[in-house]
Length: 332
Image 1 (cartoon, helix red, strand yellow):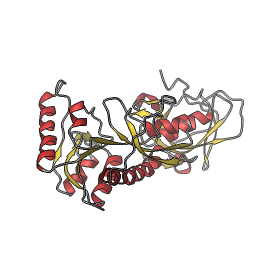
Image 2: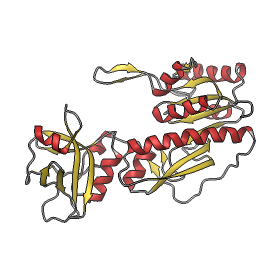
Image 3: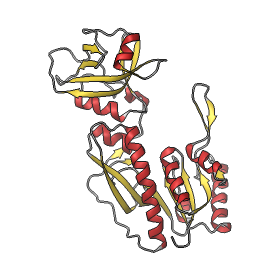
Image 4: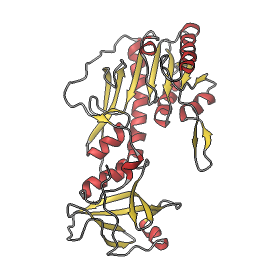
């Protein structure tokens, strides 16, 4: 590699931490990390640092955690402090570029303009499909067979910037958001390292996003977790995979809320009302769906319990043919 770049990095979750780790491994210098403030997490609701902050601390990288970057917003003092930190990183450390990955804050124009090479974003979809906060979830939920990563030159719009590099990835039948996330995170880290090398060599060739095919990946709401058994078995199966690990698809059976972690669609048909348990054994809990299809749930979790395969779950929870899960719309 030629002279390493000096990279300001902005990101928060594990997806971003994977990219930061690869940037550091490639030999680039990171004089400043921006990440979300520590949040309560776990049963004890103790403050927990983001995955990016934890990695930055391990590498002795200075960390800024503003509530906002907007000088005219709700937290102008935070934004002013962040602006000063970015300006210092550029001035003292001669930072060249900012890399952004799942940061969670809107970047105002002054942020985009600050580094010499601007801001590069790692986005986990094949733009312009699935702009927005939850591209991995929405791709699975929609039944997409392909996704990927785009390195984008950020502008003031929401994921509207020019595309610099793209890599594609197949979505396989049993992919969950968790499994697809991990592959896309590795891909994103490798692709942004390549983009930084191309930026050094002045080889980046920006491409405008197409006007057709724009979709918006709305942020996942916990209310979406509730399964609507009136939907098709295929649609419910996709939602189970899309909402693993968050917020986890759930079904109401009397007073019990049961999380559905894994399920398969069976080709068999039925004549029962949607939500009816057709059978429950070591191979899974088979439930009637609205299109006449069957969803076989193979991994479940009772409130306060552990995720269990069907055989272990049924040893501690009685489910028999004829019982019926509540049917209601998952999206009010």
